[in-house]
Image 1 (cartoon, helix red, strand yellow):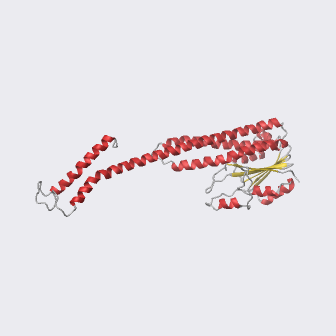
Image 2 (cartoon, helix red, strand yellow; image 1 turned 30 degrees about the horizontal axis):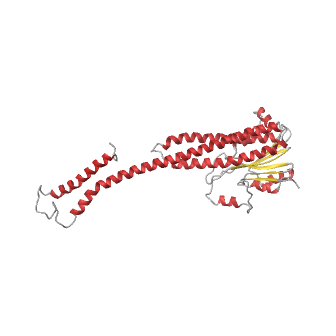
Length: 355
């Protein structure tokens, strides 16, 4: 029996019915998925074969499993699109699942793109859905003769060195994506202080994207470290040289995590600032409405008294017509305006009304 080592997700191994997580995720908003073309590329390297499977059928994976003695559970894992990151190590190969941002975010639930890798001394098998642009570009480079230098670097060494090149390209793309977030933050900073541009929705969407990328990056660092330990037996380079290569990849992942942490803190500041400015704007509106209703109180009260069926100075039942038939109207206007003017002057003195 092979000596088998399993390293799963957050360090906890959950036993549950297969497909439970997948079904729960699919029960949400229905996503609009563009069909991906099925491709199987067999690329011959110097001392190994690279088989890249894009959107494969189960039969395609089972053929390779029979040839290279893959574990049945690993076949199930790589055919599942929502499997947690993991690493299973065997005597002659190891299997790893990594997550990366997809080429284009699909409408609906936010999900990552899964890359499943089988690697041994004389083979490297990559299984994905065709939405990892850097990986697709590496496959195209190896198929064509346009860039012989790059092709020789990818295929001229060993399967372990090629795996490093693949992960390095994907991590560089992740780093580029994190830098785009910084550019979006700079633009959002200007919009936060622009009352004409509501930014609450933009802040929420960008926070979601930052959290999603961080959920990719933190486990990725852990598994790249594990890959670096296991892949040395499949490389022609010295252990120290390959370790340096993977140390550089890990350094890039650290930069991504650091950038995302700083961006998340900045987003919290923008969120609080937008909340304060929104409250300030609301308070200004409420203050204006309050003053309007307050200034209207005297006229409302006096109008109420003159609407009663009692004799009041200037009222309908009063025989004294001091200034003619408009006595009642003039008395009401004066009785309403004088308190309103007094309150307006008082509010202005308090600074509630700006000049």
